Image (cartoon, rainbow, N blue to C red; front, top):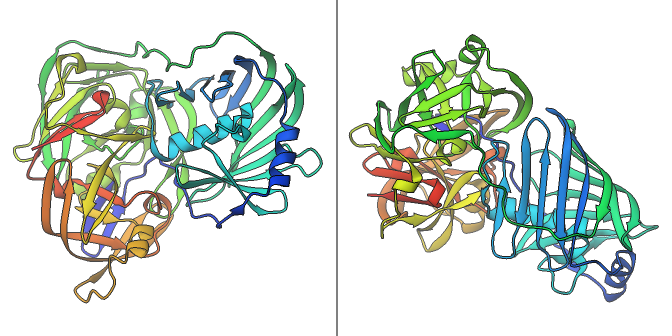
Length: 496
């Protein structure tokens, strides 16, 4: 979420973790591929299940991994907080920490598929969509759908996967796979550790591997929300070009929460969380424009947004005082993609009106536009000048119009030979990045056309604004004159 200031923009943190560019691999030689396949060889059953224990910052729990020889998978872990991902043969799904499974695409789906491919051995099957390229001695690039996903190191003595470094724009994110043992006639990694630049994030210890029938569908929805009314208007205020809505938290009365589709998880002010004594859940890594930090997690009490009632939602504990001071309104929370995944929210940005609608009482109209969920956050396909297509992150928490990510600016030459630009700074967690601001000729997105509007072109951006597979962020500044229906349960939006 970005707030526009004279020559300065400040970023509210999101949970997105983002890819970075990798070296160009050379084609994998037949001898190398043969040795890898030989090490991973074995007759696998049609489906099998791996069970064990799981540990993360929130505590200990259990995990259940289900695999199929044809590449389907379903991986779930449950400690204090749930998580997981899967592919049912038709679509990818993700289970974020809020416990509500939903469709998944983009980088999140690619990473999940590559990790599951390594754990199951499917990455070396002739039918696999994972492309293996050699980078050096016992080091390989793993790509999917034309995107380089990770760098893999294999053990030179066993030729089995040892370390998988995911391509991220900020810090390390890697899996270490060890203690390989043959189970059911093929090798299985019995210890997997996930870490980042700050140390260990999570670990998995295998306790059993059995051949048995398995389901690969997404888990059922948690019983953490209900609707007291099918449709209800919600008090709303327009703060600049953004929207804040009234949220009732336990018995604290009315509080103002900013609607931010760019935030993967909702957030609550530290003061309100302490006042309501919401229990702590550990920490989560939050990534912004220039860095990242570990933020506390709380288990919410009862949240009431119109007719929607949500209980026990994991929320980020954040210092929202700077945002309140900037907006001139006491902001006690952020309505993120987790709450929006449970309801249809209609925002009339022209007249500052909001309405909450139960998803089963709303049907997508003909003009609805599909969104791509990369993790919980929605993305939109767009066309833009001079003649390009790309994905834009929908970010109603930003007061800017359109911020092009640095990789897209350089790759597409969006500022080449332009003399009308002025220097701006985008300030966020961990620092700030420089950009240029000027009029963008045209943009077509969400069924709308925009011409000659101010946009920001980042130079060497990092963190949350450095995705090389995303063109940029679409902010509330471009949607201010429209009615927007956020229908994430139906994986679509309407802009008119």
